Image 1 (spheres, rainbow, N blue to C red):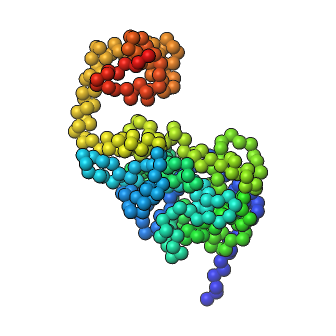
Image 2 (cartoon, rainbow, N blue to C red):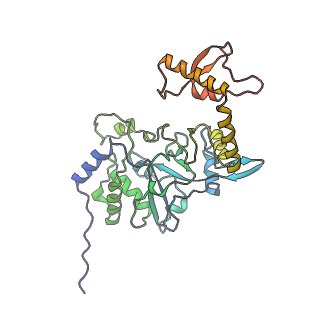
Image 3 (tube, rainbow, N blue to C red):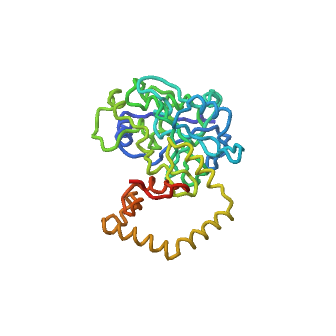
Length: 334
């Protein structure tokens, strides 16, 4: 039997330059990625977030922008479901512009015998993010449609191979893709094919010398793809929830678990209430004022609201709709 000739994967300097040009200044398709052991099911279905390791992480990095792992309901703690992800950049795998550095992953994932799969997420189900620490980890709450998830790895890989491949593809380190072992070069080729950027950069920049660490560090923006307009939790709601408002996030997740019968009753009540002559006249007055000001249909997130003096004023929709006091009324104080 003839031996099978296996061609060694080689990333040429030209291929590497093309990769940098295509990835450094273009918006990636995927907004985040996740690593998990090969025997785990694909991460479409959320898992309970209150694992001991997650709880320890939350306690160690507890800040004003901490994200809830559970909610309180009538004195009972209920775990939330979701998954942790990282920004879609190689810096997440090797968080250093200059040398070798290990990502903040579970220690068991870094075991040389552990094999991992890498998944990418796209669409509007972007993570709620933690504080702007070195590695801005985030959480995608709830379930995610399978069509928005792509498995990048055809075969499971070791974290160490991912880390070295990511380090070699960073334009600021001395390690080159051609210096990698064959298996690590295959991993590097896989990462390049996903369109993952070495680092996320600010949009609208002219080409700069990305071989200089200080240049890349100055334009590094790990939240460029996680704009607040896209940060929607994967739950049926029209409200935008942001990191920095953990109680609001927990309240919204709790609110979405209302019984279907109660939700249906509320919709019927609201429909009947809003069709009364008083409410119709109320909306007509506000819409007339919006047309007079030339902002009708502008989607500028501004409301025309009533003041205590009986006048109409313009204010942010969040401030207007959040002002509900049974003892004071809902009119704006001026």
